[in-house]
Length: 47
Image (cartoon, rainbow, N blue to C red):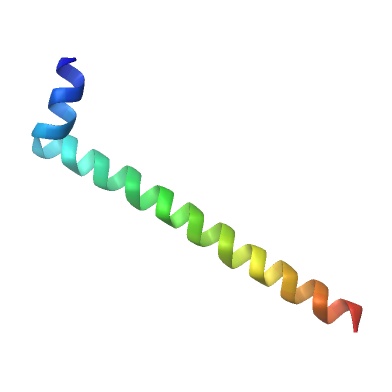
């Protein structure tokens, strides 16, 4: 319980949460970008 309290109430805990959120957002963005590039490439190769 102390770990969760530290995570949400200290500066280093909040920065850890911010880092985790940024990594997850980056992974979602990369997945979407790569998926669209793959679809575009497949569309161009079928022509």
